[in-house]
Image (tube, rainbow, N blue to C red; front, side, top):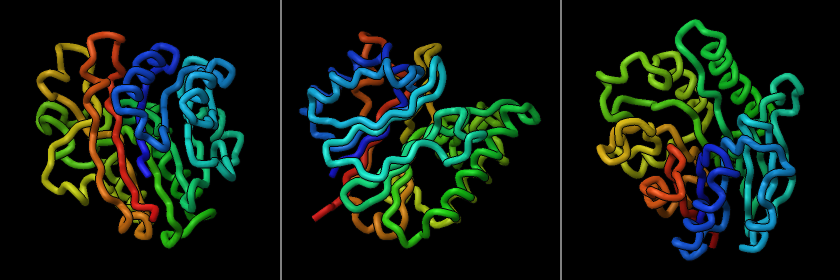
Length: 261
């Protein structure tokens, strides 16, 4: 089973690109997790994905945030958000049971400079995510968290630790929040399979960063032990990020293949 996570940075702006990319891949993806839809549910292009065999569960928001799971295998027990109205005002989490595993698609807050409200909210959001996992799961469950976590966990996950020191996504407090999430019982699948690789998933639009590979690794697949042993491969697909037209997202898709036999 092949699962992909992709921050599209507006599904309406990126719909044609996503459809071209799926065609380019030969429509080999079983599950596609999208973040930063920037559209309410009624503006999600359901017919386009349904025509390719996907059923889509969407938690959208006008102009900001928004997450979706599009799946060829049946979606069961769909849960939007944390079940807390205050935390769920921003549409950043959607989960479902699919083929015996529980899949979370997450769009973690971008944050802000140290001390800003957005910085504090990001750290608190991580704490809320951990609380939600503690209350609803154990590390022995077959659990996979994917999405845009807006943290480069270590210096190897950025093109230049010196140039980006103290920038959003690299501050110690953010990295510690991500480490606490892993400590609950999750493993960074890419780093486990590729311990020395410098592979990024996000590149800014300015200055041709993608062509110089001046990026950050902020999109992840995090697995509990029962799923980690079933991982066959994980990688980044640069094809949609290196398009001139349609205009690409600033992220590239991350895919993971699991053995479900």
